[in-house]
Length: 537
Image 1 (tube, rainbow, N blue to C red):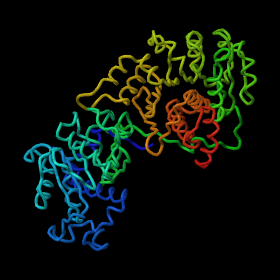
Image 2: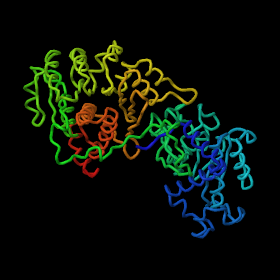
Image 3: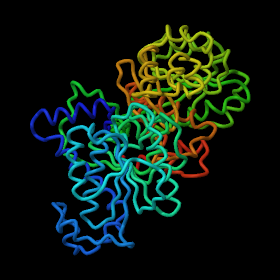
Image 4: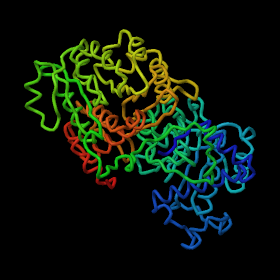
């Protein structure tokens, strides 16, 4: 797991480092600016190759300017940068970048939103350092700029409101100039995005930034809501804060990944040591979802998987299964009888089950307090009375709602989530999932490209299908049923509910990436062997 931070957590980490006396705010700002320049040149090496009078040896010298500013001839062929600075420390980082680019021979124009007299102390120092090299103009979109590089140093992790008009229109010019090949880079995050929720304070631009450079760790906005689409490529810069995360006061959200060690099988193990999962099926013509779930549970390593099938659907199910077993389960009485077998240690209800059937069977399943996944119809069955469901849930349950199901189960929480923010930090999907898990008393996996998983204690992780893990072809019928099966299979194997949900969600995306475009739900379980091999299993 890698940690994702909120704006407040990042500020606390920086302040702890400064108060320890190990570093000053000014030094952190200098490291940040240098890190941004390094990240730009790593992303586009051709920009570093234009030395304009510098020797290669001088060009890689990251100390003071190897030549005085007047040495550099600012001709028509010079690389040009436009740096848009805001009124806080993000703007201070921008002044550092402007100075470093100028020292390398770039033609640099700097624009400031706000009053220089009101800049924070460290930002003001770097403003003055830049003023010794160049001018600072008021923020405006009236000038017909063209630049090789635009830098958004407007509002970083401290943003709490929509960006002002001057910055909005200046960035609009930058976005338009990208049609001519300009590069657009953000410091921390795009200025229009809330750090903690990833939502826009104000709807902004259709195209993502070319590069976003953040410091120490990624923030929630880089994986939630609009943030991934807005940010483009995200690079993390080390500014010397390693070891400053204090678990006593940093309640970080994890970015979920898989652990190969958790899947290790020892040679003396046998099928019953890996659990026996029971998945309940819908009636005739509606058994496909449960069969997908069962296949997922079996492939991920459940020792045995049984489908509980109503009498009228047994023929169609029997014709489709081999390693998966089948038992007739058509009503609450039959389920209660089936659950007398204590070797059945994990249950899944919902996929294709039908609303009325689900309502009748969920209470029977939950009475046994076995590890249970409730998905699809098992959630929708309680849309009119979610409290009835919450009263029956126990700590080894996992709920897997998509947004529509989440809205029906947690209408008040969902209303806060979809409210358009005007100030920050905005209410986020992390906030919503944590609150839902606490209300339900069990793990909640809130599905989406930015899947969020939380338990009642507040532990939370994000499984993101963005950037190099983008898998839009997961939006296909039945993929959620397979995910429910993955979770159920891991519960059968003895995974704790939170670990089962996190691991299953990560593997779900990995399987989609392994197959690629053209994926259908049936393909997902069949990709697990290849994914496991890559994990070294």
